[in-house]
Length: 236
Image 1 (cartoon, rainbow, N blue to C red):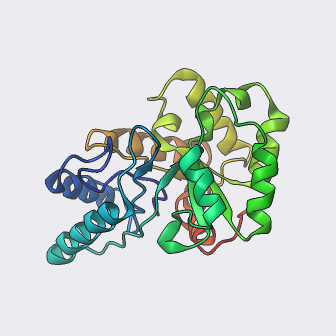
Image 2 (image 1 turned 90 degrees about the vertical axis):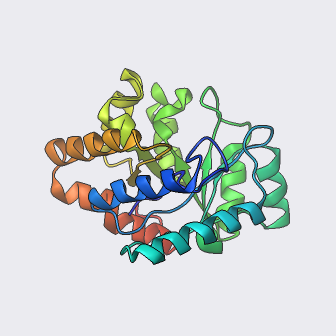
């Protein structure tokens, strides 16, 4: 199960068109995925497609997949930047979550964590939300602060990018993501697929996990834990 991908066409920096989306999905199926969550960006001032445009792109992709009779589920969600748009949606109780649930994917600016982030996360958890943090290996405040990493992992779900695990997103990101997997701080791994070429990195990341952490860990990060997460349970 892939919790994070940019497969919907024409919305952000992911797939530009339906043909590319289908090629991306075909590649993910070949890697063994049967569920691929569509998580287009919701990022103020850069990639903020309307929810109606997202729904339309999702419907079109589902139709194309059904026509080919591919054994594939595509839950809809969004990758929510921690910014004023998300903050307003927090206030309105309207965060775009996985299939309309209170489980939602978020990202931070890599250089810093927002002020008061843990207080806000506590409020969200009390309100029944489960924050899922995309690519935590990118956030530089976590690199040299094990306590900060532990705290975030205990309060949120941590989903590392397979490309980072593969070593294709930089040496430091590779070191951090691999350490998180080996120490049990990564609760899931995802493709964060933006183009067909990213499939190679996803495959390499899966191979690294299988070789260094074992088949059981790969299954946990890509199957059993993602199922728990979508059900609203922190895998711990």
